[in-house]
Length: 171
Length: 169
Image 1: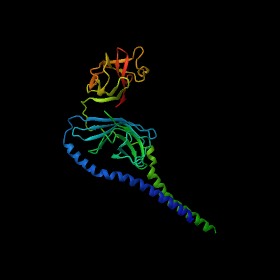
Image 2: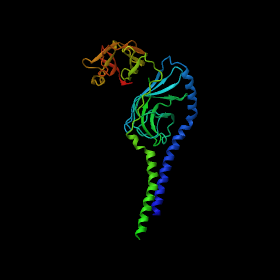
Image 3: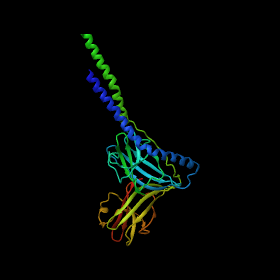
Image 4: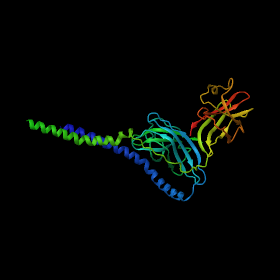
């Protein structure tokens, strides 16, 4: 009896610890971007006053690939007239999952289930995936070096797994 | 005797429930298995491009090794419904009677340096320059589902200088 309870407790503690750990990692990456995101919000408020008269420039584009988590579609980076960078996903589809984010990674490309935490790959957080299907936009923090962060990844933070990657090419 | 056995059984059950529920809860929280069956669909509009401007519909990278060809070929649809091809960052070898054509992406002839016989193609015009950005109008009614590649084609020698296989933008 005592043994059953003990075993049970150990399992419960492990489950909780596992959940917390995943959450901690997710937070680690978010912290750095907190400041930037605040700056972005200010930018945006100014932008709203301006009219979007001139056309946005298309800088980079790439196709998503990912077989394990069936990811497809196109990722395109636009530069708006005021210099702000926007990532837009079109014809997009991926598998739904827990704590999935859109990130830029400092690699040429990424394979299915690539673990950027283990590989120590630098990344830029763009935000939580808004939906696993459909067209969607993400702001890219000002000053992001797109010559370095050359791949868009749909990344499951909880399990540190790349669902799909789109290597960006000059448009 | 019987009572003790009973109470032991119920205590076991209670312990199992007390431990089982948080464990199941934790597992559910971590894996969120219901997400396998639930789709979250979004449809955000592009935040910038106005309707009056031409939209890219297909794009592809130009490649050609023997006659070094590079750059990007993009097919735009303008507001009036007309399609045109635009070459950017473009570079190819100069040559005699070089044309820009649409070809069938799966055409085996494209794998050869010199095409034997006639290449099934849609003429877009003589190459305006072997370097630099340039536009070509597409004939009305051209079937882009059939002709899904752009080729830089030397008609005199039936030589394929470069090919860009188009993908949906």
